[in-house]
Structures are given as C-alpha cells and as structure tokens.
Amino acid sequence: IDTTSALQEADNWTTLSDDTDAAFQAGDLKTVASKLLGMQRSLLVLSDSADYEERHARLILLQGKFEMLVIPRLEQAFSAHNLELAKESVVMLKDVSKESQVVECFVRTHSSRLLGEWSTLSNDSKLKLTDVLTTYYELVTRLVLQEKEWCVGVFYDDSCVRQLLVKVLDSRAPSLADSIRSELGRSSDQLQCIVQLFQQTDNFADNLQINDALASNAIF
Image 1 (cartoon, helix red, strand yellow):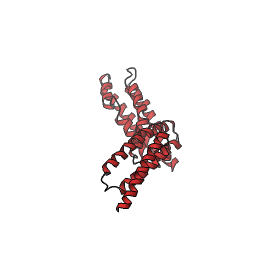
Image 2 (cartoon, one colour):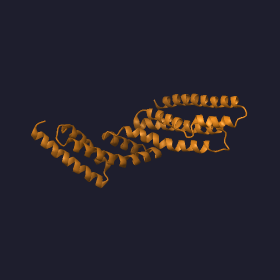
Image 3 (tube, one colour):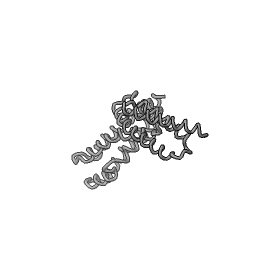
Image 4 (cartoon, helix red, strand yellow):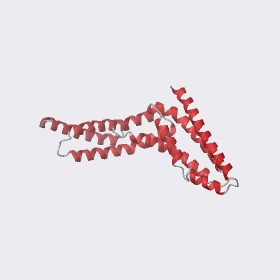
C-alpha cells in the first residue's frame, strides 16, 4: 500500500472508530456491528503500519464490549424462542468474528436448567435412581426434540443440539457413575439394579434415535 492510500485508510479507521463509540453511546448495536466489521477490514489494509498492534488491541477491546452486550440478548432469545431476535444477534456476532460464542451461549442457556433438574432429582433421598433417570431422560428427550427443529431456523442445521445433548449427559453433578455406586450401595439385589439401569439407558438411546429420525423427516 502506498503512502497516500495508507493515510486515507488511517483516516477511515479513525472515522470508523469514532462512529463505533457513538453507536455504543446510542445503544445502536446493529450499527456497532457494521462499524466493527469495517474496522476489521481496515485493519487488514493497515497490517504493515507502525501502530498496527495498538489498532488491533483497540479492535479486540471493542469486540469484547460488543459481545458483552449481545450475549445477554442472545440468551434471552434462546430462552424465549424468539426467532427474529436470535437471528439478528447471531448475524451480528458472526460479523465481528464471534461466531463460536453463539453455540456456547445456546448450550449454556439450555443445559443450565436441565443440569439443575438433575442435581435436584439425584439428591432427593426419597427417589430411586430408576425414578430419577426416568424423569431426566424424559426431560432430555423433550428438550432435544424441541430445540432440534427450532435450531434449524436459526443455524440452518441442528449440530448445536448434539453439543447440548453431550453437555446435559456428561456434565451431571453428581455424575451418573457416582449415582450408580450410591444406588448399588443401598440395593438388596445389585445385579437386578444394574440390569434395570442398563435397560433404562438403552431404551433412552433407542428412543432418542427414533425421535431424531422422525424430527429430521418432519424438518426436511
């Protein structure tokens, strides 16, 4: 890039930076996203400038500020199944290279409630583990079916639901292994207990596959 072009791009960067601050002040997140995208592109042109690192740090700071404002909106959209707000927030985060935060937000929003249910159920001394699993597996199946179709409207695929499923099954506290050990410790017939628990989990997996196939056919 020649000197004249570099000076013009530096002026463009300054204008974009000032416009971004003004948009933040006005609470206009769509404009913020647009200006941040412009700053990203401008920074590529200014990659050889002496103050590149300073400009890059400025951009990272603004992107972080933007993310902190958009993520709560996205969480609200996911919780309320507000399709338009979700789409709008996803597009804005993609524009500022924060796409990875979208799926993380989705998984966090829906898994937190379900993992809380697991904790409550598994710590209820009046319930057998078979009862706990029956309730929890029903909740998980219902959630997966509900979110699978909805997510296609936001992400245009349902891969995020698979990540959600992994989260709600692998991050339980207490863990399933600990719960099984506890149940065996109070069972008079450990073999029968193990067989029942295995059958429950196997049926859950089978039902999930069947429902997944039915949901896929309904969507596509």
